[in-house]
Image (cartoon, rainbow, N blue to C red; front, side):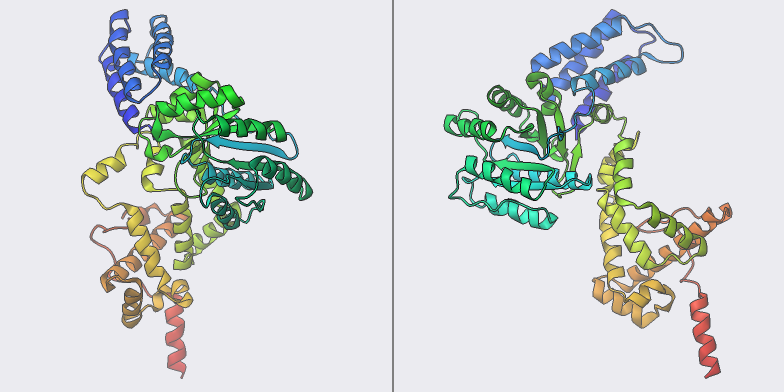
Length: 472
C-alpha cells in the first residue's frame, strides 16, 4: 500500500534535508518533487495543486525550530495536510437506526459482494447481528457467492432468486431482518456503469424504498483516477455516505485514496487489504498518512494483535514458559496466531523504520519466513498428540515417520526440535531473569548459527520412563 508514493516522497524530503534552513527557493524545489510524486501516484491534479499550495504556505510561514532540521519540519507539515486530505478522522458507520441499512454500490468487478461479507464480519466482531441481502440478479452466480460467504461466516442472509426484482428483494429483506432483530442489513446491489441509466434508476428506487442510513461506494483502488470519476457520478445520483477501497494491498500508488474524499466529499470508511474475509480494515486517515511517509502504523498492528491474542491465553502461556512446560502443541497454536496477523512483509511495514526490510530481503534472495513457518507447522502436524506434548520421546524411527508425513527430510525435523528446545530454554531463562541464557540470541525459522546443542536434552519425562524399566 502506497509503496511507490512513499519512495518518491522520501526522495523529495532529501532535498530539504540538505538545507540548513527553509527558504522560498528550496521550498519551491522540494515541493516540485512532492508534486511530481503525487501526480505519478495518480492523484487528481486539482487535489495536488490545492495540497501543494497549502503545504507551501505553511512552510514559508514556519519558524525554524531548535533541534529540528528543515526536512523534519516539512515532513510534519506534509503529514498534517495528508491527514486532512484523507478525511481528518476515521469515519464511523451510522448504526443508530435498528436495524441500520447499508447499501453497497459500484462498478461490476469492484469487489462489492466480498466487501459486503467482510463488513458483516467486522460488525459481528463488534457483537452486532448483521444480515446479508443478495440483490444482484444480473451477474451469474452473484447470489450464490454471497450465500456461500454468509454460510462460511455463519451470518443469516435473505434467500433471493434471479427471478426476483431487486427493489422487492430489498423491501422484503428489511421485513425479514426486523423479525430476527438484526442490527444491520447489508444490501449487495448489482454492479453497473455510471452511464447505464436504467440500472442507475434502479439504485435510486432501492434507496427510495428502504431509505438506507449508509450508501457505500465500493471502488477498486487499482483503477486510480477512474474510480474517483465514477464515484463523483454515483455521489450526484445517490448521495454517498462513504467509500470502500478494495485491493489496496495491490495498489502501490494510492491515488484513489488521496483524491476521493476531496472530489466527492464522501469519506473512505473501509479498505480491503487482502483476499481473506478478515482482511478489511477501518480507514484511519492519520495512520494512512503515517504509512505514506514511511512512519509505519503501530496502532493498527497492536489492534490486530489484540484481536488474535486472548489475555487469559497469554497468562497461561506465561506460566508454561516459566515452568518450561511450553510444548510443540503450544508452539503451533502461537504460530497460527502470528500468521493471522498477516505476512511478515505487511507487519514490517507497520513498524517505523522497517518498511524496506522485506524488499531488501527479497533482493538478497532470502527465504521469506512464511514458507518456513508453513513447513514448521507441517512437521508438527505429522506428530501424534503425545509427541507434540513430549517432544523428548521423538527417537530416530519416530523422526523418520514424521519427516515422511510432512514431506521433509529427517535433518529438517532434527533442526526444528533443536530450535524449539533452544527457544524453550531461552524463554525460561528470560522469564526467570537469567539474561545469561539469552546470549545465543533468538532462533529463527531458517538456519541457525553454530554452537547449538546436538539434540534435545533429556527431561523428567524420559527419566521417569527409565526408572519404570529398571523396576521391571
